[in-house]
Image (cartoon, rainbow, N blue to C red):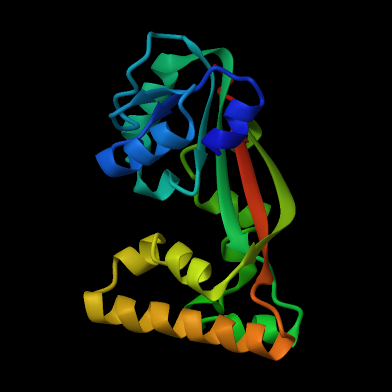
Amino acid sequence: MTSLLVARGLVIEAVEPDSRMLAVLARNNPTARHHHSVSTAIPVEDASLDAVLVADAWHWFDPDATIIELGRVLKPGGWLGLVWNVTAQPVEPWEFELLAESDRYDRSTKGSAEGVSNRLPYFPDEELDYAQFAWAFETTPEHQAAHMATTSMSIAMSHEERADYLGETRSKLQAVCDAAGRESMPIRYEASCARWTPKG
């Protein structure tokens, strides 16, 4: 997300608590301002930000303390944007093959407006806007396994469980690629986006 925002010519205050990830962010986005900090201590002046954007990371935050900090840093009329990328509802047979048991959920619990709203009970409904966007990412078996290794579900696993899970992810997509005679396949996602604009 940082790269996309930089490409739009915006002034970016990028905040990251992990020093290794911050180094990668700085290397990939040298024109952004980089801060080694957390969501509850954003190192900017009061009422200085037009928006705060979070992609696939809100679940790591302390929401109550973060909301207090947002009240400090956002300008009047400023807003919080949240994005979750959810694997799209499978349609093709190979998409069902890739679906892990842990992903066989009722989609209303994640990607829908109701699902997102249920995960944000501390925001009044009248202050929330919601939108959803379809997109696809062309990925190889190795890249898909590397991507899944960064998810909170994978990180929470034991070393042995993670190795088995990532090996299975890699093998499943490799079988699909081999059957299609391709090196990669388009993995379809839905970006579920919520915008909170405080009224008071």
